Length: 154
View 1 (cartoon, rainbow, N blue to C red):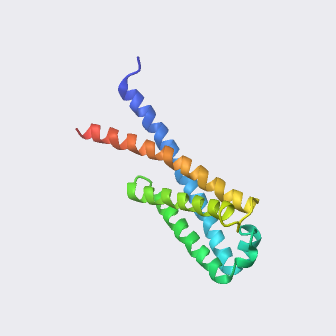
View 2: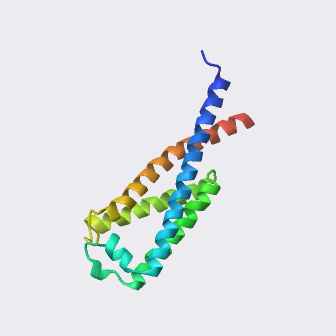
View 3: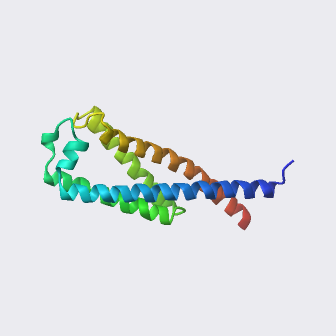
């Protein structure tokens, strides 16, 4: 039988590795979003050519800058979460940004018809989906970590 303390150390090591991978993922996604923000401000045709190809005529400069601001805000939140991944409130807000992004792109694809199933839309759908999955797994690790930390104090 394996000593419970050894089992706890192994589980903690595994949690830390996963959370470090998740942190790296969040930084990478954040950096890519910063690039998309810059592109949205530079030329609004970026959105009509890559994302909203279903009805490109609806894309204008104002819509592109609004998209850019949303993307920048999401990027900053995700980067801060990578820095302080154990902050439960920040973690939940970051997870929510991915749910909002997923909902946005799915609604543009299936409800409004402004997006088509191109790589420009499938990529953010995959990033949002993988991020949600990873963050939900990470949330379980954080809860186990908090529980074991509370047991140590008692």
